Length: 155
Image (cartoon, rainbow, N blue to C red; front, side, top):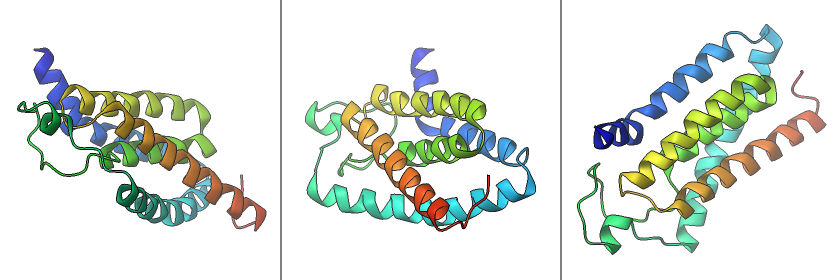
């Protein structure tokens, strides 16, 4: 039973985060939705770029490679840093934090469960999850501050 929950969390729970983000996105005002879209369009590719750059400088073999075991979720034996699933859900939580703090706490909690499920499934180390969260938060907040400074977004 626990394995089933871990597998669900590692493979599919990120979709719940995306759905929650979309649900709360539609609850925002029209001007907030426009600002959210601008922030997302700039932040998401930058998060991906930063993650790819950091993965060139830090290699973390996946736990199942180091520990020589079969993970609960099949995965390539490549660099585990950073976690793409966690990057996406942490970005969703951080984007929502800018516009709807209460919703971001729920989304952030589910996002954390995604990352921890990936660790429990044996496809990531905790450092992969923490690194992903840090990248998503820093990039999104820096883009938000730059846009706010340029007065390209409204709140």
